[in-house]
Length: 551
Image (tube, rainbow, N blue to C red):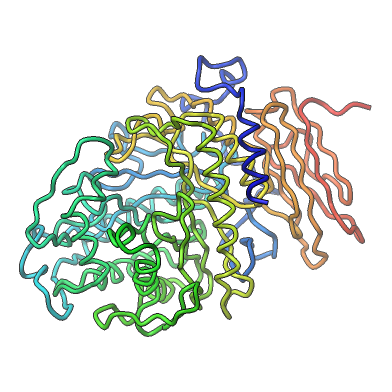
């Protein structure tokens, strides 16, 4: 199956154009300067309301029992103040113009970055012996409740703003190469312990910093939790505070505990060694579990008793936790992360290719990139059911929280088609460039002048936001605007199916909707196509085509 998908995908991109001067259809894309409009609604209410559920199986659900698909973008600011919020004139400003433009594109989720350094900056320097010496973990005395509260209050402004446009937030504790000392971001300076080994700056792409000795030592002390500063314990404490703060927020979909977990042991010893460490970080010593290969994990005595997942769920038992496998999984390497018996987990994966420019991140071999991404997506889909647990029979649902990082529309369009085939939601990297120290301007969807790249047309698709049954197929043709949805209706669900239709992007002359096994109950050319299942229907098929209906 995976090989056939890869071959078909590679064939599909042959002859596709790369980023050139904008075509006529691209000039029709909205921009940041477009008028700010209210979010579309169904009967005056958002099409989907939280909290979202993950009872087991591949899909997310709303409280009406409908399958929910999330599609959107990443918004991560990696410099002080390490978050975006409405602040006119500042580099980190994120306001109604951004949120409204996202809504016009049909997006309903933002993976919103925050950092440990922003939440718990502390005052101690790197390699402070009072924190970095070996010994039983204890209190490093770096936490400041007032600092945390100010940070979270600004973060909530953004969550609330997105919610006004019916856009969910996944709060992402972001890091790349651990800390600024290694030209990355994430951890506070006080949590950097390198045993005195100085940082070096190898020439070339920023990701080469991962292989430096100092960065490897800093990561190792975090995963081993073997210094008196109790690095994991403080990280978990901070996460617990975040979860408590957003406990009752209806527009928070959930929490991403650690972006792209990395250890030098991935290179030296293979995935199995680090994935055991990672699983212990997630669960803690009090929750023994097994790796995917069935081995019972024995977590180090220095690890916290309660890991980051139970800590988050203790602070907020009603939202989702989007746990990630190790960083190498994004390239299609195997992962040994096993079942974790907690409710509300989402298997959260990234998909990237390796054949990319060290300067822009764009593919240097489009066919190789397509083949690798299709293979990686297929492998991660196969991982998911192997993580079944009593709390989530059939395994957790899954979500692709990063892909793209490119201005190459053919690669983006191919990935979007494959995600449709796998019936999985996603968040594109990224919305804006924000002078990203570990990225390039080519990665953003929105350019500095406020215009959208042509990649936006591939991402702004007609898609089902909520399905009153079990979806079996989704397809969308960017060239024609043709959309097809097929699902098995659930008679116990009283709420309708809702399909997002980005009229301003793909249907300037309107659209024609047809349904077999149901009926359309929304107005003509509505941005939200609402469908009621017909009594007794065995299947429902929804079709959308560009232009008015004929006959």
